[in-house]
Image 1 (cartoon, helix red, strand yellow):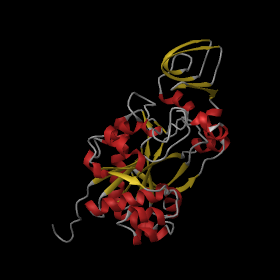
Image 2 (cartoon, rainbow, N blue to C red):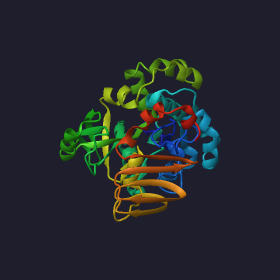
Image 3 (spheres, one colour):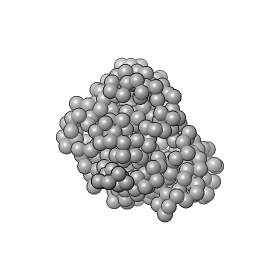
Amino acid sequence: MTASTPSPTTRWAVVLAGGVGSRFWPLSTPSRPKQLLPLVTEDPLLVQSVERLGPVVPPERVLILTNATLVPTIAQMLPNIPRENLIAEPRAGGTGAALAWGAQEIARRAGPNAVMISIHADSAIRDDHRFQQALSRAAYVAEQHHALVTVGVVPDRPDPGLGHIQPGDEIDSNARRVARFVEKPDMARAIEMTRDGYLWNSGIFAWRVGDFLDEVRRLTPEIAPALHAHANDIRRFFSAVTPIAVDVGVLERSDRVAVVPGDFGWDDVGTWAALRRVRPTDAHGNATQGHVHSVGAANNVVHAPGQSVVLYGVSDLVVVVENGMVLVTTAERSLNLKQLIEALPRSVTERT
């Protein structure tokens, strides 16, 4: 290899699988959060996410960042992932700290030119092949342009619950610069943004780890000092950082961010009501699991494996049967189950 020849690159993946989640209570618990649940198919969302990466990144180059308490369960779910690739975060530091730690770990193993693809463990994808194509395009743009690349999902509806990205000037046929990020807009603005070509901020990224770490050191005082002082000590690193999202701490401050569009049927599966978009539905829009009989009922979600549920003349309900607990709420109220859990006695919330 001559001095003018760039060093070879390898592609790695980081899967963010932390968080405890309350939005799928009573099915989800701190020991079995959303990413470990079979919400879309019979496989847990995390297992689906890692298998979906297979054609792009082999298992030995996949790191999973998660809560320490979940590591044993994840190790059983994913026996093909090396045990040393399951990284336990000792404290929640936001996606900024998690991805900075993942990037420096990849740099330590493979050098600064390695390309890191980052995904969340709890998303639903309808078209795996197109998803993999989008990841490969994002990795290519990161390699060729030393850019921090985000995959912007092409919207299929206005959605005020999601962050948006405004594409800017063209970089090449695959990517544009990011003109700006917009946090969750109201519905009127979401309709306007969808019409004007904005993309959804999916939280799917690709970058050379050296480029990303350079930007963290330059732009992110919430993380940079800890990265410098504790690069080899995960406990001290997470204790020293100020928790911050990577979007806020790095991407919104950087002038090296590009966006690659992706149209692959992405959904963040954020609430029970979202299952109407990712599960098969009957002719009346009911998404059900279990022995469900509906008469004059529409647009309901029922999760009751092994149970019998009858719906009669109701719409837009969520019905969950789990471990002797029955939850009945509206699709709208299911958006904020945290408020419900806080109002219930612990004897109710902890029985699951």
